Image 1 (tube, rainbow, N blue to C red):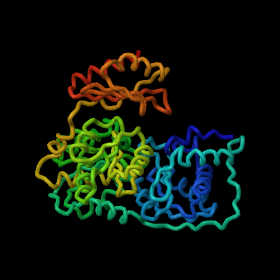
Image 2: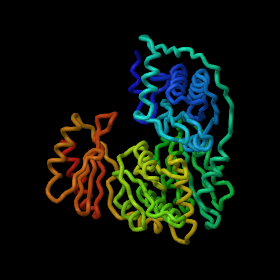
Image 3: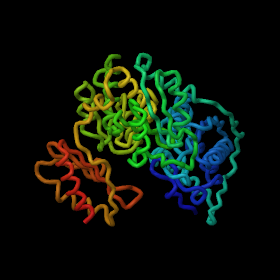
Length: 460
C-alpha cells in the first residue's frame, strides 16, 4: 500500500510531479474528495504550472465518475477559487504548489463556502481512501460506483471575483497612485489587470507573463531575495508603493515608496483598523480581529486602542478560520502575509488586503512609510530557522534558560516566553528537523541580544 503521508500535508496535497504523484493519482483524489464530502457538484481551478491543466482535468474526471457535476474555472488564483466556492456555494479544488519550485504541484481543498479542508476536517479520510485503492506495486484503481456520471462545464469567474473585491473597499475617491506589481510569473499576472482596471492607478507590471517555470525568481516574496527586483523598480520609477504576489497570488507583500518592505504585521494592523472602523460604523460593538501568536504586539495593541477585541491563535490558516467562525471576527492576519476577511467567506485573499492599502494610501496625501509608521512599534527578528537533531531537547534547554521569575510562558504553539517589553517564540516544524525562532522587543539592541542568546542555545 502506498504511503501518502509525504504527499498529503496538514492543510493540502503537495509534492513533486511525476515522482510523487501524477494524473492517475489525481483522478483518485477527485473521486475520494466527492466520496468524503458527499458533494453533488464541485468547482475546480488551476494555476500556471505546466502540470496543472492535466492534473486538474484528471481530478475533475475522477469527481465526475463518482457522480459530481464539475464546474471548471480554468486559470485562477487561489483566492479566485475561494470566491467561486463561496459565490457558487460549492466545494472546491485549487491545483497549485503556491511558492514551491516548478517541479512541485498540489491541491488546496475546501468545502462549500470556502470552508477549509485539513487533516482534521476530511483530508486524512481522503488520504486513507486513496491508499486503500492503491496496490502493492503503487498502481491506483478507483472502484466503479453505481451512479450516473456528473457533467463537466466551464465558467469564467474572473470578472465576478474582481467585482466582489471592489465592492468591499471604496476606491472611488482615491488620488492617482503609481503602483509597481511583481507577479513573479504567477497568477497575479492573471488577476491584477482585471482587478485594477478602471482604478486611478498607473500600473508598472513586472513578470506578468504566466510561466510556471519561474524564469525570473521564485514566486515566494517571504524570502527577501525575491523582493529585490521590486524594490529596485519602485525606486527607479518613483512608485508610491510596490506589491509582490506569491505563485498562486493568495499572499501579497508590500514595499513602501523608499523600496523598504512593510512588515505583514504592520499591514495586519492597518487593515484591522479599517475593518474595525467599518464594523463599528455599522453598529457592531467590539469587533473581533484574529492574529497568530507570532504577529507583532502592535496588532493587539492597535485593535484594543480602536475598540476591537484581539484574539490570539496558533499559526496556520485552519486555526485562523476556525477561530473566525467561532468569534464572527471581521478580519484575521498572519506574519506570513495571509489575510482573512469575514466578507470573503473567512478565506484568505492578498488582493483584498492590497486594495485596503491602496484605499488607505490614496485617501490621504502622505507617503506609505509615514502611514505605516504608527503600526511599526517594535524591532523584530523575522523567522529564523535552525536545523537541530532533537527539537524537544533544544526547546527544553531554551525554556530552562529563559522561563524564569518575572516572565510569562505559554505553549499555545511551541514555546513563547515574554518579558515586560519583549517576547520570543520557538516552534518545531512538523515536516522538517527545524526549530523556528521569532523575537520581538521594544529596543533593537534588546531584540538582537535575545535573538543571539536563544540561537546560541538552539544551535549548541
